[in-house]
Image 1 (cartoon, helix red, strand yellow):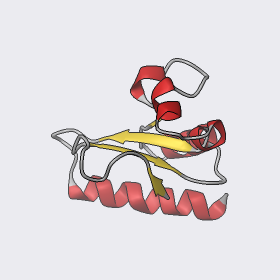
Image 2 (cartoon, helix red, strand yellow):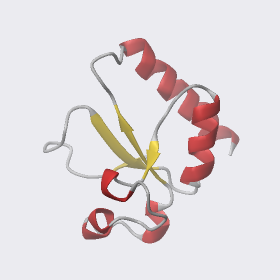
Image 3 (spheres, rainbow, N blue to C red):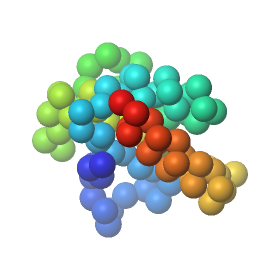
Image 4 (cartoon, rainbow, N blue to C red):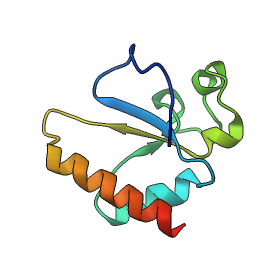
Length: 96
């Protein structure tokens, strides 16, 4: 996993990362099948099929952008939710 963006200057409830070699749309479907919602790309391009200008400005290649996910946590997100997310994502990426 490659964490995108600054590790220091970021919203504390937002993760954006790249899973090299994995198609983000396929991973998103598999996450949703297990009850986890995430998004591809950045929020500003969520409805577009193109990598966002923000990701490009961060020097993230189009290929890497197609392997990237955005996950946002809310007030109701628990430690158990995050543990489930990590386990499910691990299972998905090992099987693909």
